[in-house]
Length: 263
Image (cartoon, rainbow, N blue to C red; front, side, top):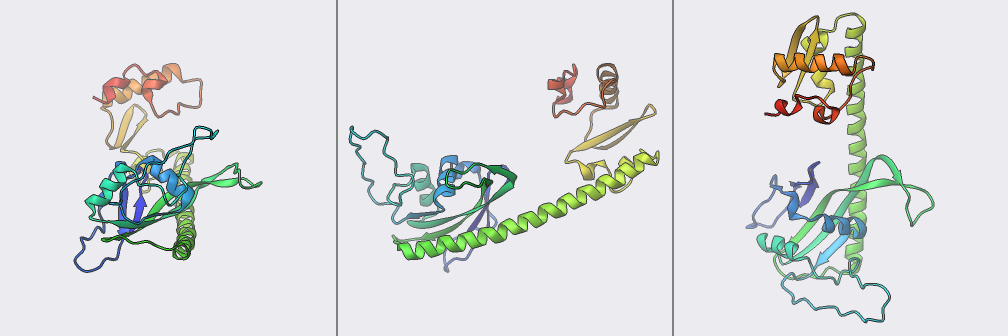
C-alpha cells in the first residue's frame, strides 16, 4: 500500500494491491497515533525498515559498562519493533513487513547538513510504501537496496508534483490578489465581498466581514453586527495610527471582548 500523511499527521491509504481474500484498506484513514513521531524520524533516517517476523522472541541487548556511549540499534535492521508497532501489525494480521519512506522537500528552507558542505533543503516524510506478508519473510539486502532506490525515484516524482501544485496555487493567489486590489483602487470596495473572486478566495477562513460607511457586509461565519462594531471601535481607538492590525489572536492582541467571540 501507499500511505500518505496529511497536514495533521494522520495517514490515508491512497493506493494498494492485495492477494485475493485479504481485507482492502484503500481509502481508509488512520490517526496520527498509529505511527509515533519517533518511528517517523527513523523512517526519515533509514528509508527502509524490515520486520521479518513480528512474533519472533526479542533478545535483550546488554551494554558493556566500559563503553563511553549508549548503545543504539536505531539504524540496524536487527532492532526489535516497538510494542505499539507490533500491535499495529497484529491488528492488520500481518507477520512480516517491508516499509519504504517517501521523503520530499519541505518548502524552500535550507538547513546545514553534517554530511555535506552545501546546505540541504529541509525534508519531511510525505508517506510510506508498505509491503505486508501473512507469514515470516526475509528480504535480502540486494532486493531491499533496489526497493530503496525505487522509493527515492518515486519521491522525486512526488516532489515535482508538489512543486507544480504549489506554483499553481501561488499563481492563483497572485491573480486573486490583483483583482481584489484593482477593486479597491477603483473605489469599489464592496466587490471584495460581493463579487467572485472575493476575499474568502484569497484567505483560508470560515468567514469575512467588511465594515464600510457604517454598514456591514458579511460572508460565511462571522461575529454578530454588535461584535463587529465593537472590534472596529477598538481598532479605531488603539490602532488608528498604524497601517492596521495583523494577528491570529484578538485575545493576544488585547481585545477585551475576545473571549466572547468563541462562546
